[in-house]
Length: 91
Image (cartoon, rainbow, N blue to C red):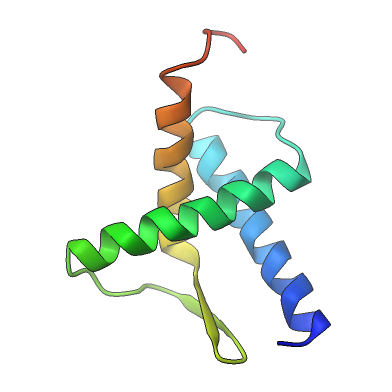
């Protein structure tokens, strides 16, 4: 994977993490937090999709690597919703 593909994957992960966090009720997260949420969401979403025998929707290919955008958004929303259970209201 070249540098351009890696940076583009970081951009896609950041957008997916930000959308997932907004769906779960969190706003004003930083770029690094959105990237981490996007990757964690991709892991959670892909794992859930494989266990439920669901197809991959809208995967973006980077060389030989695939990034499942829809599952990253849904997985990051689930992860942020889970984290919201342990945070104080209004924060």
